[in-house]
Image (cartoon, rainbow, N blue to C red):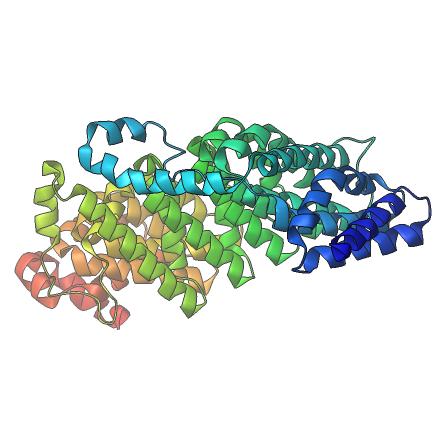
Length: 510
């Protein structure tokens, strides 16, 4: 009993010192309070003292000395970890409409009882005073953090303190149940709108991480008011620090997935530019975001035409590890698409045909699964206009990536590419005259892919008349590459009248 009284007296004395004007004494008092918080004895007494004395600790966040403000944030973080507690919510709290299903379906209703009983037991273990303290403490922290991070008059000058305040807010939100997070959500959006454009890179990083956290934890509220964060996030996507770019790409992925998915129209262009990023971590994160959208985004079928090129471009990344990850992710997307549509009568006949094995196929090239091929064939006509523009882009790296994408699209199209041959040939003629050898090599490879899947009776009537009127290196190169990929059996059987062409171009194809 005497030890408790001594401990209480010492703690209250430290709290009283916090109102002193002596910086050194205040720092020592905060350090002593932090030490007591990190110990494991006298927890109930300490909890009672914190609940009654916390306003004095919060007041240190407005101290003139930066060191005091910084240490006060650390102390408050420890208080959040130890004494801010809320009863857990049932797992279906975000979807209250599920309760109607549970009421109607006897099996589901029975299955939900253990969850509700467990939540009730946890709630009973917390007394009303603890919950009241946690709510009041949370509200005051959010109010103070908003005052210090938003606005010109009361903004925190210290970069380190601003960063620690964001860490504190992040830690606090992870403890909040969804219902209480909804109450402070407007404040969170306002705070992030101010901290995302902050000049300090670590603050940008933490702001992006916090954006991802609140978006995934409370998608209903984020859908309502999170769209305003897209613009400040896009302002950081090309930041000079790679860790900021990685976190920003992740946050943009979460903002689109859990918010208004129409914002993908604003986001897709900047994300595509990150595929040219020199840091492989950034390119990998773009791949992961695009994969997640293709698998989980609401109304994702409407956005396949925008997202699929990101993944197909990663199949040709300069790093083999990214290529492997992209291939595995792409196969997963194709499998899911097939499972979702295998009963669709409109696709059944097409899928039965595409399921057939091909005798004449490029050696050493894995054939994409059925779902992947159907997805590309579904969107190919929409890819071509953009692909044409990118193949004529003034930046060499853009043209190279576009040529690689053309090669991948040709492989996925297989026999279906016949309907796009006229448009593709005109694009490829010009691209094969490109000054960049990588562009020419990839376009040749795409033309070779066409030769594997298209018979001479289709492409010769389109190519030969053009050669009579205008014969450039690009025209000859495309024809030679197509013949290189063609089957000799197909040439003899269906293209007999074009045999002189095969003889004349045999040296070129070799």
